[in-house]
Image (tube, rainbow, N blue to C red; front, side, top):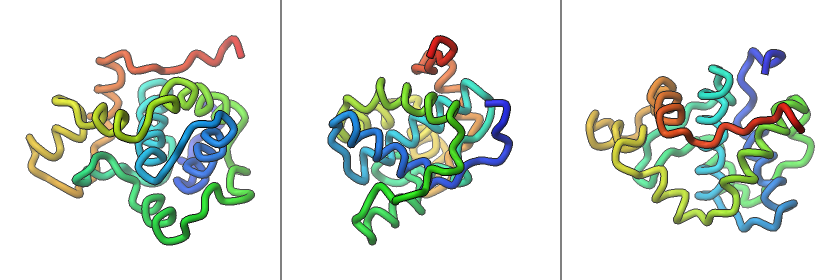
Length: 158
């Protein structure tokens, strides 16, 4: 992702994820978009050592949440947002698409259970650091994705 130095706008990425869910006939809701955005965020940290978006995931009661995205979906109830993916490079669209191909097949409950596993970044912030609603540190996310061999898509043959 050499051409991306500035993290993308979180609503743009979430909107693109919703578009991919619709395209692939994957059910989606606010919870699922949160978890898929978190999956993409972690894969980009692990694969490129860069942040995907300008918003950090926070350790809310029900898992990692990107508050701006959550509030937009909750209040507007419309998604995806038209013409918001313009800043996403083709390389990043391909990368995100591969992550969604892998994780998008799971429902929101399964993805939530996965994000709550003991030893996960969310679990560490909530239960070990006792810091609910705090930012989940990027180093915890990156290390977790790397240590657990969580799908970092190979886009070299695309």
